[in-house]
Every structure is written in C-alpha cells, then in structure tokens.
Amino acid sequence: MSLITIIGRGHSGTRAMSHTLYASGVFMGAAINRSGDKIPPEKMYDACRVFAKYVTWNGGLTWDFSRILEMDIDPEFTALIESYLEDVLNSETEHKGWKIPETTLVYPWIARMFPEIKYIHWIRDPRDGILAGHKTDDLSSFGIAYPETDDNRKRRAISWQYQYQLMKAAPQPENVLLVRFEDFVLNQEQTLQRLEEFLGFPLGRIIVRPDAVGRWKTADGPYGFDFLQEALVENGYEV
Image (cartoon, rainbow, N blue to C red; front, side, top):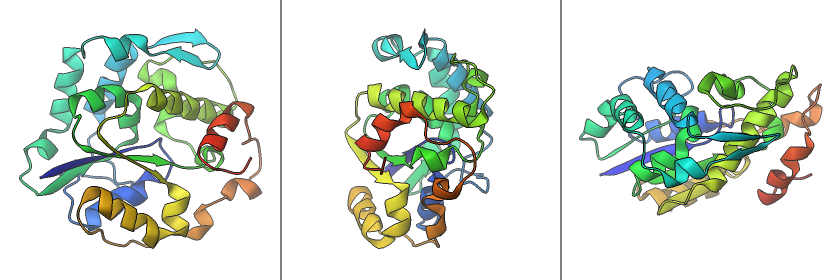
C-alpha cells in the first residue's frame, strides 16, 4: 500500500498530476474539486495557520523557519491533518494520496508526520504561475507576514518565493521526485515513465495543452521580478 502527495504552489499545474493519479486508480479522497484538490479544505487551512505561528518574518523576502524545523510538531496541527486526511488514511485502496496546494505551506511538518510516503515536488515557471490568482496569493490569510503591496502579480510572486524557500529549508524525506510542469506537458511520455518508476505502478494518460507553457511571453503586465531569478536558474528556466 502506498501513500502519495503532491507538493506545489497553486496554479503550478498540480491538477494535471492529481488528475493523472485519479485516472490511474489512486484514491485521492472521498471528494475532490475540479482542480483535483481534496475537499473540504478547512482543516488543512487551519493547520496552515497553526504552522504559521512558528514562522518569523525577518523583513523583506526572508523568513526564519528554524522554530518549525527544531520544535516538536504542535499537537493541534497533528490533529487537524489527521482529521483532514481521515478518509485517505483509513482507505484500504492499494494506492492512495491527496493533493491540495496548501500542503506546500506546511511541507516540513507533513514530511515529518509521513517520512516514508512518496512526494512529488511539482514546479512550474513562476512567470506563468503568477498570471492567475490563487487563495495562497495572500499569505497573511494563513498567518504569514510579508511585504505589503497593491500589485497583485508581485503579491503572487512573493507567495511563490516564500513557498520555494520553505521547500528548500525542509529536510528532504526519503522518497522525493522533482517534476517540472513544462516537462509533463511537452514530454509527457518520458516524464510519466519517470513517475511510474518512482511510484512503482502504471499511470494513465491525460490530455495536456502545450499552449499552457510559456504564456508569460505574451502576457501583459509585470511578471519578471528580480527576486525570482535565482529559482529560475536553479530549475533550468530561461532568464
């Protein structure tokens, strides 16, 4: 029996992976929405707010994650996550898992609670990822302080940067595979073969849209924020 989760910011294309797992017979929860998120999400949202109490904003675009990395997991957090995942954890299905972007906001503690499960680290060029809004755009709604701005694109980019830093700060669990959305779309068969080898079972094929890649190149408004440059280079995106 295997347990799987997808770690990736909202609007990074994680629904494609969720739908692929669902089409492959993976139990993704008793109810999921059109984005492939396990619903209802409220207990996950509350868990994010518990986690955020132990993150310190240093000002600018730096946060101190040392407390959440060193302390024992808050029991309230554990209870909320176990309640949110109750149907998944109790399922007798051979392969099961969940996807909701807010999992990324609490990734270090999820990895500590479930050290042996399969983690799919999903990433997309942030310049595409910030073109549309997502609930995690406003980090303050989950208790995370950040530089105030009236620029919606910049707010999304800050959220992307925060989550990227959080993922990098977390110790890597045993079973992690990094997948770029662009590779899944443009080289689906090769990427699915990597995923099948990692997960240990065959995956279904879903329809993908190549025009979802590189939309930022023809988009109006800002998208190329300087603080994203390091992550672009680290993940092989053109600068």
